[in-house]
Length: 121
Length: 108
Image 1 (tube, rainbow over the protein chains, first blue to last red):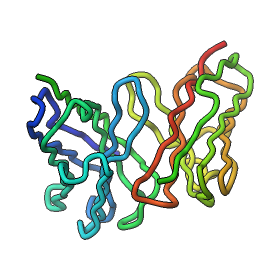
Image 2 (image 1 turned 180 degrees about the vertical axis):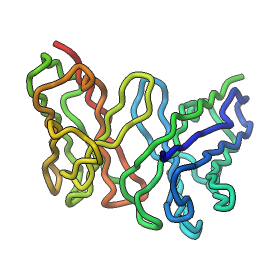
Image 3 (image 1 turned 135 degrees about the vertical axis):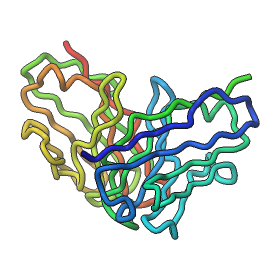
């Protein structure tokens, strides 16, 4: 069964940092690009970041550029999102989602269950 | 950035009836559109990609169509489990990938 499990969320103060992880199982991880998508509770979906299967292509949404970094460890079947200089606007449920291909951006399937990040003093 | 606009924001339909959800792109995205369903407390689930291709195991009552800037998701004969929020997404011009704001399908 293909599965994505996010972890690392929590309560952090404004200006703080947090590193999210997404552990994959049930498929050959290094054959697929990965994404992070976030959702403010009760609101819509916002794409955050993309990383290709071998990590050579990485993209970030303008709203997080310069503050967030995406990476992956194919030996651990895990993708990460390092978040720094966090603000209240980053409060959201963060999902990781698999791309159907190695390097081209497409649709997202499947999605993990998400990890909640709350930025508050 | 391509803006995806969904309508209506809320759609009230009776079980067993048909629902048609719309999504408009601010510029042509060819057929590079996906649709997702999100039930309360759950992660989004892929329904349709390539504007009209159903994901594995998706019931045939779900269908998507469109190209260019106009897209629709139709659910024939609504079942209780179909009442949820639906999002469209474009992947033609990225980054960024962009989503519509969602249509809530509620029981009439």
